[in-house]
Length: 439
Image (cartoon, rainbow, N blue to C red; front, top):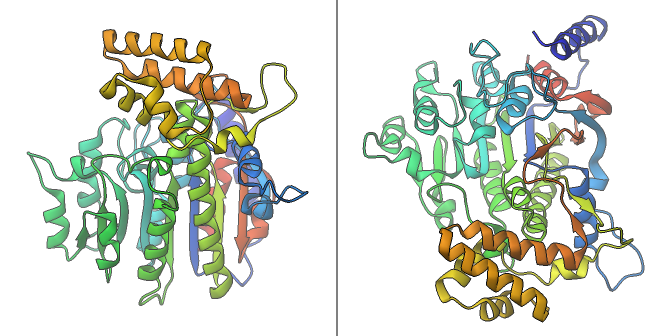
Protein backbone atom coordinates (compact mmCIF):
# COMPACT_ATOMS: atom_id res chain seq x y z
CA UNK A 1 0.00 0.00 0.00
CA UNK A 2 1.41 3.39 -1.00
CA UNK A 3 2.29 5.64 1.94
CA UNK A 4 -0.23 8.28 0.87
CA UNK A 5 -2.93 5.64 0.79
CA UNK A 6 -1.96 4.43 4.27
CA UNK A 7 -2.20 7.98 5.61
CA UNK A 8 -5.58 8.47 3.95
CA UNK A 9 -6.84 5.12 5.25
CA UNK A 10 -5.82 5.97 8.82
CA UNK A 11 -7.38 9.43 8.55
CA UNK A 12 -10.60 7.94 7.21
CA UNK A 13 -10.69 5.36 10.04
CA UNK A 14 -10.15 8.01 12.71
CA UNK A 15 -12.83 10.17 11.15
CA UNK A 16 -15.25 7.26 11.17
CA UNK A 17 -14.47 6.49 14.83
CA UNK A 18 -14.69 10.08 16.02
CA UNK A 19 -17.66 11.18 13.93
CA UNK A 20 -21.10 10.52 15.42
CA UNK A 21 -23.75 8.69 13.42
CA UNK A 22 -25.58 11.10 11.11
CA UNK A 23 -28.55 12.59 12.90
CA UNK A 24 -31.82 13.12 11.08
CA UNK A 25 -32.61 14.46 8.65
CA UNK A 26 -30.68 12.50 6.03
CA UNK A 27 -31.31 12.86 2.31
CA UNK A 28 -33.72 10.53 0.60
CA UNK A 29 -32.27 11.28 -2.85
CA UNK A 30 -28.60 11.72 -3.78
CA UNK A 31 -27.56 13.53 -6.95
CA UNK A 32 -23.82 13.30 -7.55
CA UNK A 33 -22.42 15.47 -10.35
CA UNK A 34 -18.90 15.13 -11.72
CA UNK A 35 -17.44 17.75 -14.02
CA UNK A 36 -14.75 15.69 -15.72
CA UNK A 37 -11.53 17.69 -15.97
CA UNK A 38 -13.11 20.74 -14.30
CA UNK A 39 -10.48 22.59 -12.27
CA UNK A 40 -10.55 25.89 -10.43
CA UNK A 41 -9.40 27.83 -13.49
CA UNK A 42 -12.23 26.34 -15.57
CA UNK A 43 -14.98 27.61 -13.28
CA UNK A 44 -13.18 30.93 -12.89
CA UNK A 45 -12.99 31.36 -16.67
CA UNK A 46 -16.63 30.37 -16.92
CA UNK A 47 -17.62 33.19 -14.55
CA UNK A 48 -16.09 35.74 -16.90
CA UNK A 49 -17.28 33.96 -20.04
CA UNK A 50 -20.88 33.89 -18.76
CA UNK A 51 -20.78 37.48 -17.47
CA UNK A 52 -23.16 40.01 -18.97
CA UNK A 53 -20.79 42.62 -20.46
CA UNK A 54 -23.54 45.27 -20.47
CA UNK A 55 -23.56 45.48 -16.66
CA UNK A 56 -21.00 47.21 -14.45
CA UNK A 57 -20.32 44.21 -12.23
CA UNK A 58 -19.30 40.57 -12.64
CA UNK A 59 -22.25 38.26 -12.07
CA UNK A 60 -21.69 35.20 -9.90
CA UNK A 61 -22.46 31.72 -11.21
CA UNK A 62 -24.06 28.62 -9.76
CA UNK A 63 -20.53 27.41 -8.99
CA UNK A 64 -19.87 30.47 -6.84
CA UNK A 65 -23.21 30.03 -5.09
CA UNK A 66 -22.70 26.38 -4.12
CA UNK A 67 -18.94 26.27 -3.37
CA UNK A 68 -18.23 24.60 -0.01
CA UNK A 69 -14.73 23.14 -0.19
CA UNK A 70 -11.94 21.42 -2.09
CA UNK A 71 -10.66 17.89 -2.59
CA UNK A 72 -7.38 16.20 -3.43
CA UNK A 73 -7.39 13.69 -6.27
CA UNK A 74 -4.12 11.68 -6.20
CA UNK A 75 -4.21 7.96 -7.17
CA UNK A 76 -2.60 5.05 -5.30
CA UNK A 77 0.91 5.55 -6.63
CA UNK A 78 3.64 8.17 -6.47
CA UNK A 79 2.60 10.16 -9.55
CA UNK A 80 0.10 12.46 -7.74
CA UNK A 81 -1.65 12.88 -11.14
CA UNK A 82 -4.79 10.76 -11.51
CA UNK A 83 -6.67 9.62 -14.56
CA UNK A 84 -10.47 9.54 -14.73
CA UNK A 85 -10.70 5.82 -13.93
CA UNK A 86 -8.70 5.93 -10.69
CA UNK A 87 -10.41 9.12 -9.56
CA UNK A 88 -13.90 7.86 -10.41
CA UNK A 89 -13.13 4.65 -8.54
CA UNK A 90 -12.21 6.77 -5.52
CA UNK A 91 -15.32 8.93 -5.91
CA UNK A 92 -17.61 5.92 -6.34
CA UNK A 93 -16.18 3.45 -3.80
CA UNK A 94 -14.17 5.44 -1.26
CA UNK A 95 -10.94 3.58 -2.04
CA UNK A 96 -7.82 4.67 -3.90
CA UNK A 97 -6.62 2.63 -6.86
CA UNK A 98 -4.23 2.78 -9.81
CA UNK A 99 -4.66 4.79 -13.01
CA UNK A 100 -6.85 2.83 -15.38
CA UNK A 101 -8.71 0.90 -12.67
CA UNK A 102 -12.48 0.53 -13.07
CA UNK A 103 -14.07 -0.24 -9.71
CA UNK A 104 -11.19 -2.43 -8.54
CA UNK A 105 -8.45 -2.02 -5.94
CA UNK A 106 -4.69 -2.17 -6.49
CA UNK A 107 -4.90 -5.99 -6.45
CA UNK A 108 -7.60 -5.80 -9.14
CA UNK A 109 -10.28 -7.05 -6.77
CA UNK A 110 -13.81 -5.59 -7.08
CA UNK A 111 -14.89 -2.74 -4.82
CA UNK A 112 -18.50 -1.99 -3.93
CA UNK A 113 -19.64 1.32 -5.41
CA UNK A 114 -22.17 3.72 -3.96
CA UNK A 115 -24.49 2.88 -6.86
CA UNK A 116 -24.35 -0.83 -6.02
CA UNK A 117 -24.97 -0.10 -2.34
CA UNK A 118 -27.91 2.13 -3.25
CA UNK A 119 -29.41 -0.63 -5.40
CA UNK A 120 -28.97 -3.15 -2.58
CA UNK A 121 -30.91 -0.79 -0.31
CA UNK A 122 -33.78 -0.62 -2.79
CA UNK A 123 -33.14 2.85 -4.23
CA UNK A 124 -33.63 3.67 -7.90
CA UNK A 125 -30.27 4.13 -9.67
CA UNK A 126 -29.24 6.19 -12.68
CA UNK A 127 -26.26 7.44 -14.65
CA UNK A 128 -26.30 10.32 -17.12
CA UNK A 129 -23.22 11.22 -19.17
CA UNK A 130 -22.25 13.11 -22.31
CA UNK A 131 -19.58 10.48 -23.03
CA UNK A 132 -20.30 6.86 -23.87
CA UNK A 133 -21.93 5.40 -20.76
CA UNK A 134 -19.18 2.78 -20.48
CA UNK A 135 -16.46 5.46 -20.34
CA UNK A 136 -14.20 5.63 -17.30
CA UNK A 137 -16.31 7.76 -14.96
CA UNK A 138 -19.73 6.10 -15.32
CA UNK A 139 -18.09 2.67 -15.62
CA UNK A 140 -16.46 3.01 -12.21
CA UNK A 141 -19.91 3.21 -10.61
CA UNK A 142 -21.22 0.07 -12.37
CA UNK A 143 -18.45 -2.28 -13.46
CA UNK A 144 -15.24 -3.89 -12.23
CA UNK A 145 -12.40 -4.20 -14.72
CA UNK A 146 -8.63 -3.95 -14.59
CA UNK A 147 -8.53 -1.53 -17.54
CA UNK A 148 -10.73 1.35 -18.62
CA UNK A 149 -9.85 0.47 -22.23
CA UNK A 150 -11.83 -2.80 -22.17
CA UNK A 151 -14.94 -1.05 -23.44
CA UNK A 152 -16.84 -4.10 -24.68
CA UNK A 153 -16.21 -6.10 -21.52
CA UNK A 154 -17.28 -3.14 -19.40
CA UNK A 155 -20.49 -2.77 -21.43
CA UNK A 156 -21.16 -6.50 -21.00
CA UNK A 157 -20.98 -6.09 -17.24
CA UNK A 158 -23.81 -3.56 -17.35
CA UNK A 159 -25.98 -6.63 -18.00
CA UNK A 160 -24.11 -9.27 -16.04
CA UNK A 161 -23.76 -7.23 -12.82
CA UNK A 162 -27.12 -7.95 -11.20
CA UNK A 163 -28.81 -7.55 -7.84
CA UNK A 164 -31.90 -9.67 -7.20
CA UNK A 165 -31.62 -10.99 -10.74
CA UNK A 166 -31.81 -7.60 -12.46
CA UNK A 167 -29.20 -5.14 -13.87
CA UNK A 168 -28.12 -2.68 -11.19
CA UNK A 169 -28.83 0.55 -13.11
CA UNK A 170 -32.47 1.49 -13.65
CA UNK A 171 -31.74 4.40 -16.00
CA UNK A 172 -28.79 5.04 -18.33
CA UNK A 173 -28.58 8.06 -20.64
CA UNK A 174 -25.63 9.06 -22.82
CA UNK A 175 -23.68 7.75 -25.79
CA UNK A 176 -22.15 4.41 -26.75
CA UNK A 177 -24.25 2.51 -29.30
CA UNK A 178 -21.11 1.04 -30.91
CA UNK A 179 -20.32 -0.76 -27.65
CA UNK A 180 -23.85 -1.94 -26.87
CA UNK A 181 -24.93 -2.98 -30.38
CA UNK A 182 -22.05 -5.04 -31.77
CA UNK A 183 -21.64 -7.84 -34.30
CA UNK A 184 -20.89 -10.29 -31.52
CA UNK A 185 -23.61 -9.15 -29.12
CA UNK A 186 -26.64 -6.87 -28.95
CA UNK A 187 -26.88 -5.68 -25.37
CA UNK A 188 -29.87 -3.45 -26.11
CA UNK A 189 -31.96 -6.51 -27.01
CA UNK A 190 -30.85 -8.06 -23.73
CA UNK A 191 -31.87 -4.95 -21.80
CA UNK A 192 -35.25 -4.99 -23.55
CA UNK A 193 -35.69 -8.58 -22.38
CA UNK A 194 -35.36 -7.23 -18.83
CA UNK A 195 -38.16 -4.74 -19.55
CA UNK A 196 -36.05 -1.68 -20.40
CA UNK A 197 -37.48 0.98 -22.69
CA UNK A 198 -34.96 2.18 -25.29
CA UNK A 199 -34.41 5.39 -27.26
CA UNK A 200 -31.62 5.96 -29.77
CA UNK A 201 -32.18 9.62 -30.63
CA UNK A 202 -32.06 12.55 -28.22
CA UNK A 203 -35.12 14.02 -29.92
CA UNK A 204 -37.03 10.93 -28.73
CA UNK A 205 -35.89 11.19 -25.13
CA UNK A 206 -39.41 11.97 -23.89
CA UNK A 207 -40.57 8.60 -25.26
CA UNK A 208 -38.92 6.99 -22.24
CA UNK A 209 -41.96 6.99 -19.96
CA UNK A 210 -41.10 4.55 -17.18
CA UNK A 211 -38.19 2.76 -15.55
CA UNK A 212 -36.14 0.80 -16.34
CA UNK A 213 -34.89 2.63 -19.41
CA UNK A 214 -31.78 3.21 -21.49
CA UNK A 215 -31.05 5.93 -24.04
CA UNK A 216 -27.95 5.88 -26.25
CA UNK A 217 -27.73 8.91 -28.51
CA UNK A 218 -24.37 8.61 -30.29
CA UNK A 219 -21.89 5.89 -31.34
CA UNK A 220 -19.49 7.10 -28.61
CA UNK A 221 -19.66 10.54 -26.97
CA UNK A 222 -22.37 13.06 -27.80
CA UNK A 223 -21.41 16.02 -30.04
CA UNK A 224 -19.75 19.02 -28.39
CA UNK A 225 -22.38 21.56 -27.34
CA UNK A 226 -20.54 24.33 -29.21
CA UNK A 227 -21.05 22.42 -32.48
CA UNK A 228 -24.81 22.17 -31.97
CA UNK A 229 -27.49 24.82 -32.64
CA UNK A 230 -27.50 27.70 -30.16
CA UNK A 231 -29.44 26.82 -27.02
CA UNK A 232 -28.70 23.09 -27.18
CA UNK A 233 -27.88 21.58 -23.79
CA UNK A 234 -27.44 17.82 -23.96
CA UNK A 235 -26.68 17.13 -20.30
CA UNK A 236 -29.41 19.35 -18.93
CA UNK A 237 -32.01 17.81 -21.26
CA UNK A 238 -31.08 14.31 -20.14
CA UNK A 239 -30.99 15.34 -16.47
CA UNK A 240 -34.48 16.82 -16.67
CA UNK A 241 -35.91 13.62 -18.12
CA UNK A 242 -33.99 11.53 -15.59
CA UNK A 243 -35.45 13.51 -12.68
CA UNK A 244 -38.93 13.04 -14.10
CA UNK A 245 -38.48 9.26 -14.40
CA UNK A 246 -36.78 8.83 -11.03
CA UNK A 247 -39.54 10.75 -9.28
CA UNK A 248 -42.09 8.12 -10.25
CA UNK A 249 -42.77 5.49 -7.58
CA UNK A 250 -39.99 7.00 -5.47
CA UNK A 251 -40.77 5.57 -2.05
CA UNK A 252 -37.19 4.74 -1.05
CA UNK A 253 -35.41 7.47 -3.03
CA UNK A 254 -32.78 7.38 -5.73
CA UNK A 255 -29.08 7.73 -6.45
CA UNK A 256 -28.02 9.41 -9.69
CA UNK A 257 -24.56 10.21 -11.03
CA UNK A 258 -24.43 12.91 -13.71
CA UNK A 259 -21.17 13.50 -15.60
CA UNK A 260 -20.25 16.53 -17.67
CA UNK A 261 -17.75 14.44 -19.62
CA UNK A 262 -16.60 16.77 -22.34
CA UNK A 263 -15.27 19.61 -20.23
CA UNK A 264 -12.35 17.20 -20.05
CA UNK A 265 -12.32 16.39 -23.75
CA UNK A 266 -12.24 20.07 -24.72
CA UNK A 267 -9.52 20.79 -22.17
CA UNK A 268 -7.39 17.90 -23.47
CA UNK A 269 -7.58 19.71 -26.82
CA UNK A 270 -6.75 23.04 -25.13
CA UNK A 271 -9.93 24.35 -26.76
CA UNK A 272 -11.09 27.17 -24.48
CA UNK A 273 -14.35 27.99 -26.29
CA UNK A 274 -15.35 24.34 -26.45
CA UNK A 275 -14.70 23.95 -22.71
CA UNK A 276 -16.73 27.05 -21.83
CA UNK A 277 -19.76 25.76 -23.73
CA UNK A 278 -19.54 22.39 -21.98
CA UNK A 279 -19.37 24.27 -18.68
CA UNK A 280 -22.49 26.18 -19.71
CA UNK A 281 -24.33 22.87 -20.13
CA UNK A 282 -22.97 21.60 -16.80
CA UNK A 283 -23.93 24.81 -15.00
CA UNK A 284 -27.44 24.68 -16.43
CA UNK A 285 -27.71 21.06 -15.27
CA UNK A 286 -26.66 22.05 -11.75
CA UNK A 287 -29.33 24.76 -11.72
CA UNK A 288 -31.91 22.15 -12.76
CA UNK A 289 -31.00 19.66 -10.04
CA UNK A 290 -30.70 22.41 -7.40
CA UNK A 291 -34.23 23.56 -8.23
CA UNK A 292 -35.40 19.95 -7.90
CA UNK A 293 -33.67 19.59 -4.53
CA UNK A 294 -35.07 22.89 -3.32
CA UNK A 295 -38.60 21.83 -4.25
CA UNK A 296 -38.32 18.32 -2.81
CA UNK A 297 -36.64 19.25 0.47
CA UNK A 298 -35.28 15.70 0.89
CA UNK A 299 -32.37 15.70 -1.57
CA UNK A 300 -28.65 16.37 -1.50
CA UNK A 301 -26.70 17.60 -4.51
CA UNK A 302 -22.91 17.14 -4.42
CA UNK A 303 -20.71 18.38 -7.27
CA UNK A 304 -17.00 17.93 -7.80
CA UNK A 305 -14.43 17.04 -10.47
CA UNK A 306 -12.33 13.93 -10.89
CA UNK A 307 -9.26 16.04 -11.71
CA UNK A 308 -8.25 19.16 -13.59
CA UNK A 309 -7.28 18.92 -17.26
CA UNK A 310 -5.01 21.06 -19.41
CA UNK A 311 -3.32 23.21 -16.78
CA UNK A 312 -5.54 26.13 -17.78
CA UNK A 313 -4.61 29.65 -16.69
CA UNK A 314 -6.97 32.59 -17.03
CA UNK A 315 -4.36 34.92 -18.50
CA UNK A 316 -1.10 34.10 -20.26
CA UNK A 317 2.05 35.32 -22.01
CA UNK A 318 2.99 37.78 -19.23
CA UNK A 319 0.00 39.92 -20.16
CA UNK A 320 -2.32 41.05 -17.38
CA UNK A 321 -5.61 40.31 -19.13
CA UNK A 322 -7.97 37.59 -20.30
CA UNK A 323 -10.27 38.33 -23.24
CA UNK A 324 -13.60 36.65 -22.62
CA UNK A 325 -15.06 38.56 -25.58
CA UNK A 326 -12.71 36.68 -27.91
CA UNK A 327 -13.87 33.33 -26.52
CA UNK A 328 -17.51 34.33 -26.99
CA UNK A 329 -16.84 35.01 -30.70
CA UNK A 330 -15.93 31.36 -31.36
CA UNK A 331 -18.89 29.23 -32.47
CA UNK A 332 -17.38 25.82 -33.22
CA UNK A 333 -14.86 23.43 -31.74
CA UNK A 334 -11.34 23.36 -33.15
CA UNK A 335 -11.86 19.69 -34.03
CA UNK A 336 -14.97 20.36 -36.13
CA UNK A 337 -13.35 23.35 -37.87
CA UNK A 338 -10.29 21.25 -38.64
CA UNK A 339 -12.47 18.59 -40.24
CA UNK A 340 -14.30 21.17 -42.36
CA UNK A 341 -11.06 22.85 -43.46
CA UNK A 342 -9.62 19.51 -44.55
CA UNK A 343 -12.79 18.65 -46.45
CA UNK A 344 -12.99 22.02 -48.22
CA UNK A 345 -9.26 22.75 -48.41
CA UNK A 346 -10.20 26.30 -47.46
CA UNK A 347 -9.01 27.73 -44.14
CA UNK A 348 -10.40 31.23 -44.56
CA UNK A 349 -13.91 30.22 -45.61
CA UNK A 350 -14.41 27.93 -42.62
CA UNK A 351 -12.83 30.37 -40.19
CA UNK A 352 -15.04 33.25 -41.28
CA UNK A 353 -18.16 31.10 -41.04
CA UNK A 354 -17.47 30.01 -37.46
CA UNK A 355 -15.52 32.83 -35.81
CA UNK A 356 -16.45 36.50 -35.59
CA UNK A 357 -12.94 37.97 -35.67
CA UNK A 358 -10.73 37.94 -38.76
CA UNK A 359 -7.40 36.19 -39.12
CA UNK A 360 -4.23 38.21 -39.51
CA UNK A 361 -1.98 37.36 -42.44
CA UNK A 362 0.45 35.66 -40.06
CA UNK A 363 -2.30 33.57 -38.45
CA UNK A 364 -3.67 32.61 -41.86
CA UNK A 365 -0.22 31.48 -42.98
CA UNK A 366 0.23 29.34 -39.85
CA UNK A 367 -3.13 27.66 -40.37
CA UNK A 368 -2.42 26.93 -44.03
CA UNK A 369 0.91 25.36 -43.09
CA UNK A 370 -0.88 23.24 -40.50
CA UNK A 371 -3.52 22.29 -43.08
CA UNK A 372 -0.89 20.94 -45.46
CA UNK A 373 0.86 19.04 -42.68
CA UNK A 374 -2.43 17.52 -41.54
CA UNK A 375 -3.18 16.42 -45.11
CA UNK A 376 0.30 14.91 -45.56
CA UNK A 377 0.29 13.05 -42.24
CA UNK A 378 -3.46 12.29 -42.11
CA UNK A 379 -3.52 13.81 -38.63
CA UNK A 380 -6.39 16.33 -38.30
CA UNK A 381 -5.27 17.07 -34.74
CA UNK A 382 -2.26 18.99 -36.14
CA UNK A 383 -4.61 21.54 -37.68
CA UNK A 384 -7.01 21.54 -34.71
CA UNK A 385 -4.13 22.32 -32.37
CA UNK A 386 -3.09 25.28 -34.52
CA UNK A 387 -6.65 26.60 -34.54
CA UNK A 388 -6.70 26.39 -30.74
CA UNK A 389 -3.30 28.07 -30.55
CA UNK A 390 -4.58 31.09 -32.49
CA UNK A 391 -7.67 31.41 -30.28
CA UNK A 392 -5.63 30.95 -27.10
CA UNK A 393 -3.13 33.59 -28.19
CA UNK A 394 -5.92 36.04 -29.00
CA UNK A 395 -7.80 35.40 -25.75
CA UNK A 396 -4.72 35.08 -23.50
CA UNK A 397 -5.74 31.59 -22.42
CA UNK A 398 -2.80 29.61 -21.08
CA UNK A 399 -2.38 25.83 -21.04
CA UNK A 400 0.52 23.82 -19.65
CA UNK A 401 -0.42 20.34 -20.90
CA UNK A 402 -2.78 18.29 -23.04
CA UNK A 403 -3.09 15.92 -20.07
CA UNK A 404 -4.20 16.10 -16.45
CA UNK A 405 -2.71 17.92 -13.47
CA UNK A 406 -2.53 17.14 -9.74
CA UNK A 407 -4.36 20.34 -8.73
CA UNK A 408 -7.00 20.07 -6.03
CA UNK A 409 -10.55 20.44 -7.31
CA UNK A 410 -13.57 22.24 -5.93
CA UNK A 411 -16.48 20.69 -4.05
CA UNK A 412 -19.96 22.16 -4.29
CA UNK A 413 -23.03 21.05 -2.35
CA UNK A 414 -26.66 21.91 -1.69
CA UNK A 415 -29.53 20.42 0.25
CA UNK A 416 -29.95 18.00 3.14
CA UNK A 417 -26.57 17.19 4.68
CA UNK A 418 -24.57 19.54 2.46
CA UNK A 419 -22.70 20.94 5.48
CA UNK A 420 -20.80 17.62 5.71
CA UNK A 421 -18.75 18.59 2.66
CA UNK A 422 -17.34 21.90 3.88
CA UNK A 423 -13.61 22.49 3.88
CA UNK A 424 -10.81 20.34 2.53
CA UNK A 425 -11.20 16.60 2.03
CA UNK A 426 -9.68 13.84 -0.04
CA UNK A 427 -11.85 12.54 -2.85
CA UNK A 428 -12.46 9.22 -1.07
CA UNK A 429 -14.05 11.14 1.82
CA UNK A 430 -16.78 12.41 -0.51
CA UNK A 431 -17.74 8.82 -1.33
CA UNK A 432 -17.60 7.74 2.33
CA UNK A 433 -19.96 10.53 3.38
CA UNK A 434 -22.47 9.75 0.63
CA UNK A 435 -22.31 6.02 1.31
CA UNK A 436 -22.93 6.71 5.00
CA UNK A 437 -26.10 8.59 4.07
CA UNK A 438 -27.38 5.49 2.26
CA UNK A 439 -26.33 3.06 4.97
